[in-house]
Length: 138
Image (cartoon, rainbow, N blue to C red; front, side, top):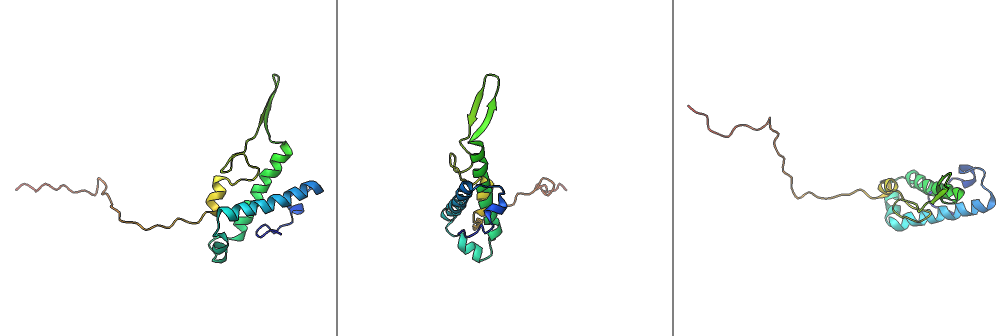
């Protein structure tokens, strides 16, 4: 049973036959495994309320949706005629060549916020804020 994607796959992706439903359930489990491996602190961030289950669930859904579409096309990306040219997908994103992968946007959604301390900062004055430092002539 999945941790974050709790919707019924047969309702989310209607018209799945029994074989495809088994594949989808495996993809859901693998997608969640990829996410928890890539972000080991995700459970703590969810329990602290920094990240919502809905966000993680939507990322899992998008990952599986791409896998379903790729499977339906047979990894075919383009087809040309009359000379006939066929091009197959090597996937894209952070896991090129994989059926399940995180896009950079999805990675950014799940990644922890960067927190850093600033050593110092210097504000440059704008040209209209600068006064002439030369002494006034008398």
